[in-house]
Length: 263
Image (cartoon, rainbow, N blue to C red; front, side, top):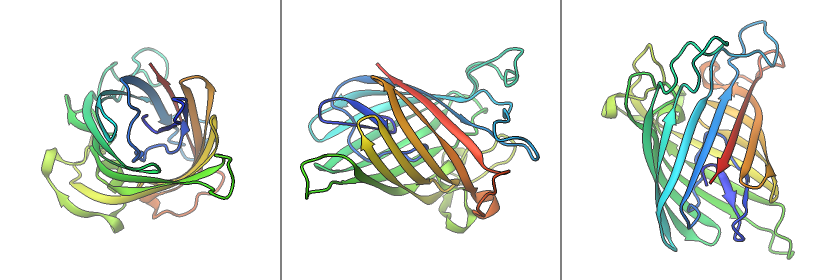
């Protein structure tokens, strides 16, 4: 469900990534999952919790078709969630409206494949969160020497466009299809492909940690489920593509976070 793992007892667990899509088959029921995410841009000589002047990004995921082996859903993205007098309210509510899809398939009890896109179809010219088309595979590795499920490792890898292909040294297959990558409001970028992946450590039904490479940045994060169907994910960006992945010092590290709730 979105970036979260769901257990056989239908309990929605923590996220196992931030931007990288999960490859497992989606839950076999209709669901609407709403998430709000963001990170601080960290202006030079500012403190770690400096507000970035933005107003977060919203996403909604709806799963409308499913069977034992596969599922199909749609997603909706909104770049601007607030307009008002407070900092970050200069853009109109609903700016950057976009949509996409997700099809996924069960490759086994512990493995899945997903093909999809986020921000694929854009209804205005205000989206800079990436035209993220992707192919992702996830696999869980359980400890077969014990009856205990936790903890266990999940590996996810794949290729994608938009924000998943921002590093010049790994870009390939560039094209002008779909009117470009949509990663910048002021400069045109071709739609290219690049690799991504995560290592996720699921500690229990309510807690996980992960290390993510999304071709835009390296991230260390953790996710917790404080209430049923509510997930909170946060962490630090430790290196970014624009700086050729130079490890950030403590004065440069940026924070990221997301709230998600399922209906």
